[in-house]
Image (cartoon, rainbow, N blue to C red; front, side, top):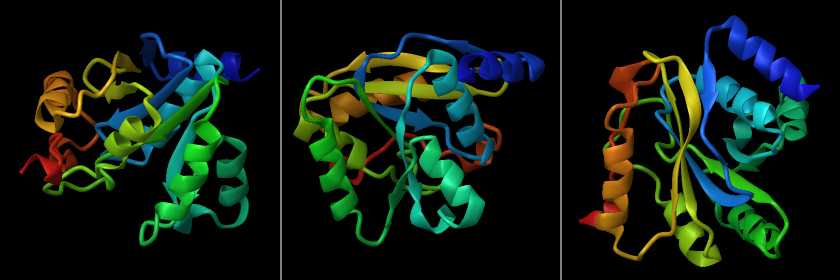
Length: 185
């Protein structure tokens, strides 16, 4: 049912979903400049028949919206103390069952100096690959980009992200933070 609904809604909005998603991965989603990013991410997941454990700030988990977020696989994240949530998710990731965690590494819909490095640390700790998810407003495309394992060379790994996201444009381009981690120096 979700697949049909996603195809219908994406088609009606003239968006297309592309790419292949692995069964187990740390998904990095960018650009993250609008609340519409979440809507497109959910439609993408539904079209592919997958559930993404999407990290969402805990402040949004109130009333009917909180119920809906939980039903779609979202995970409450206390941004002041994310360690407990991450520890729980790392335990969930053990084993061979399909498991996808989605992170908007920009951390906010506004431009900042750096991306949050949690996606990188989770990939290193779990040994899971990183899959680059994206939306591109000019081409009306939402999808999955390359999947790769981190090497431990943070700058070289982030070069992969910089190259991939260089031609992706969000709903509010001025809010996009180019991929860069504090750990790069």
